[in-house]
Every structure is written in structure tokens, then in C-alpha cells.
Length: 115
Image (cartoon, rainbow, N blue to C red):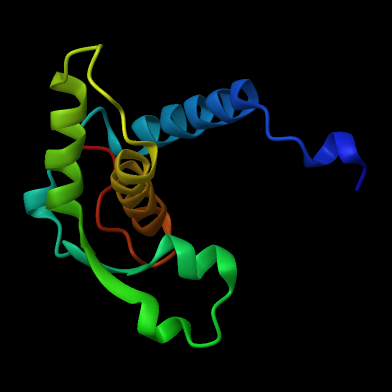
């Protein structure tokens, strides 16, 4: 891998997210009713532990909740544009919802298919 390959370009990430979200919308429809899913809570690894490779990550595992993630997403979208965006907090909630989409796409999960 060259040094140029190790550069994260936000524009590339934006394009990839757009492609993936388009595929999710095609597969699951324009909205997913979370109340109809038999999942809400999920395991989450603390960010510092995840990226500093602590010796015992099981102590850094906590619980996330997709319904809370959805509420936080709604709050983010309703904020005044001048309000501070907290990347570590807001991205964690968006990540929870993106992971839910990945979970729904797992083979044999089949929870939601194009409503």
C-alpha cells in the first residue's frame, strides 16, 4: 500500500455512503419501521478501546440502542445550522443505524425486505 492509498478522502467516503444508502433504499424501501423489528439493543465497543487495542476489550463493551440512535438522528437534523456538531457523538449514533442496515442484510437475517 502506498502513502496515497492511506489517505481518507471525505469526498470518497461521501460517495461510498451515498452508493450504500442507495442500495439499502432499493433493498429495504425508503423507510424502515424500527418498531417492527425484533432488535433494538446491540453491543458496542468504546471508541478509545476499539482504536487503542486495549488488552481486555470486553471491559469496554457497552450497549447501544437503535431507537435512541434514531432519536439522536432526528435531533441532529432539527438542529440550527450554527449549533455545534459533535462528531464523536453524532457519528456514533449514525454508525449504530448503519450497522443495523448491515445486520438486516446478513444472510438468513431477512428481517426487512423491500416494504
